[in-house]
Amino acid sequence: MFYWFLKTIVIGPIIKLLFRPWVEGEDNIPEEGAAIFASNHLSFSDSIFLPLVVPRRVTFLAKSDYFTGRGIKGRLTAAFFKGVGQLPVDRSGGKASNAALSSGLKVLRRGEMLGIYPEGTRSPDGRLYRGRTGVARMALEGKVSVIPVAMIGTDKAQPTGKVIPRIMRVGVRVGKPLDFSRYEGMEDDRFVLRSITDEIMYELMLLSGQEYVDMYATSMKDRLVSAARAKARELQEAAKPGSAAPELEAALDAAEGKGRSVVDTDRGPTDSSVVADVADVDVDDEGDEGDGPVVAAS
Image (cartoon, rainbow, N blue to C red; front, side, top):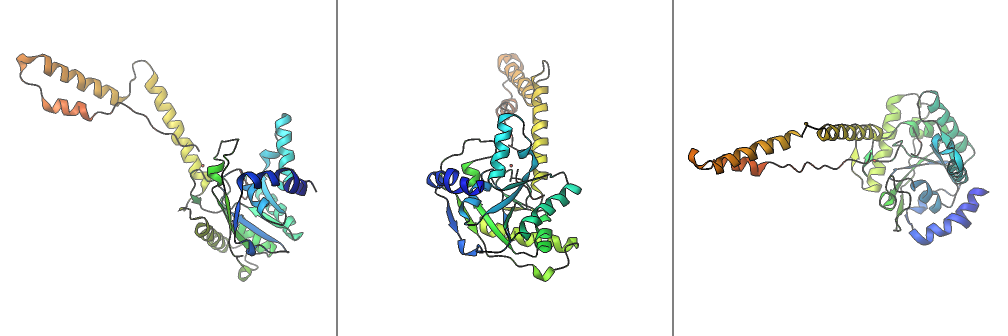
């Protein structure tokens, strides 16, 4: 009841008025029966825009952190996610993965729509990353089709870390349902699960137009975090007294050599190679740090 209250009376009308989301392929959404929506994941707001444009209720599996916050903000966040039809999932792996699978199957066995992000987390850079095989296992065990869905422009409307979204049009592109009944009874074959997942990701790549990266998004995020930490340590070391960056020290040494060659005319003309070396030294060592972009939303 609260889901429909938020969707049709409170949040839904306001979002539709401001963002005017467009939809392609709405005819591919079944009017009844269980199915899995497998979507790319660009923004926190994906879990808001997708259910908004789908006539039926969509239940998402979301990371449990959204349901365990403390204080007023934590309670409000938990209430919101429960209200918009999301279920808490522990993404730590092992038994937690089985619990996520069980939660999703309960939704499907009720004949409802389940939303899953095969990448497991938001894309750190707008590209499409390798899918986790949980979506394939759930499709086989639930005996349901998978509907690929591409979110368009949500990362521009609400980039990672931005609380207040930018008012702009976003889109949802729905692909044709994928039938994997030919693999029935093979849900424990990891090669089959990988093949199904890759087929889903291929369809998402075609729908979204994103560049595909054959690695997990979580691995890329780990790389970005490591690079940012290394850069921070480098800057800290450079800021210590007597520990100037090598480039700066080289520039100072070259500048001193140039000064001597110009001032001391008794020792001959200025060495043009020294001047050239000074001109090629870049002492402005600025760099951009990346903003580091299971089946749950993140």
